[in-house]
Amino acid sequence: MSRKPPQSDWHPATWQSRAATQQPLYPDPAEVERVVASLAQLPPIVTSGEILALKQQLAEAQRGERFLLQGGDCAESFEDCTSDAIASKLKILLQMSVVLLYGLKKPVIRVGRMAGQYAKPRSADSETREGLTLPSYRGDLVNRHPFVKEDRVPDPQLMLRGYERAALTLNFVRALVDGGFADLHHPENWDLDFVDHSPIADNYQEIVHSISESLDFFELVSGQPASSGTERIDFFASHEGLHLHYEQAQTRYLEKRKGWFNLSTHFPWIGMRTADLEGGHVEYYRGIQNPIAIKLGPSITPEWLQELIGALNPHGEPGRLTLICRFGAKKIEEALPPLIQAVRATGSPVLWSCDPMHGNTESTASGVKTRRFENILAEVQSAFAVHKEMGSYLGGVHFELTGDNVTECTGGARGLTDADLARAYRSTVDPRLNYEQALELALCIARGRHA
Image (tube, rainbow, N blue to C red; front, side):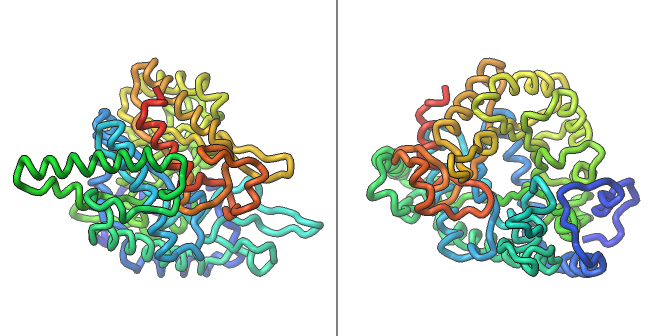
């Protein structure tokens, strides 16, 4: 690791010369600098080799040879850094990936919204309740959720806690994966409670049984074990690179790679609220070698997108850029085609992914934030259809989900209604698919209900 990188117009702190939105308003800037310096001395959470391996796989997905599954919590909680919670999230992503593998007949890239998804953008810097105004909750990386003054003041020390929780999370995931937890020969390791009672359990078990029989047949006729790829998988971490001091602290120049890498995660993304071409986030992202993604919402224009591509992938590097579209079921058929045309005009390779969650958020009559399964599925179906009609390729999906039996989104095989939401609504920010709804979506895609 070089401490004297070559001179250039970029380094991890050049973003500070730009306007950077969605950043915490810390009361003590000197303490922020001390925490950033401490974080910079700690071991990296991921390695450059893992990052480059993911970039290669994303390049293959851009060519239609793989499919990206990206999912996890809207916002991770420090309290949920437990073995059971982590294993449950890994289980549902493994279950979804094996269903997609079976249905799409191509390798699946597994990426979790985890091990760092601790910061969230907010619509306002403050909120008021019963005459009391306090800073908005921006995720556990910044402040605490209880609506009391001492918890809502942004605390730089939480960046250190976030680093620790992210490292612990990814370390446990690696231990599970390396220990054979993801072995396709033993999918029973992934079973969640729903397998015994869900209306879609039989469909899932049929797929698992078919894959198991195929592996047994291969080993029988070949006289040798199936590929080691059935015993161990690649699993990557991602989060929105929102908190730029935190991202800066773990960004390092690697002499052997001749470049800067964000070693806090494999796959950071830029949200629509921070995709200003002149802003601090685009300035930061343009300098790192990680594969990156941009969330695209209804406010994006073809010209803006072309400029973002020019700034973030000027050399047209394969695997570098993923575009995650989040328009809503009612807007996607109108909004997506002009963007596909605009990207095609640049000649730059991109991976198109669909986030059907954020554009379909609504509130119930009682003010509870939710998402309806039928709208989520409809946006996925429309995304596949539009890309097919345009001669393009939808190579990924991006879901907010949990491995727990929450009731935050309505609909699905069990027919959850607005009245069911109060039973197990646990998210502190946005509603997530529960394990059953998430797997049902994967089954719909695998069955070709997107076609």
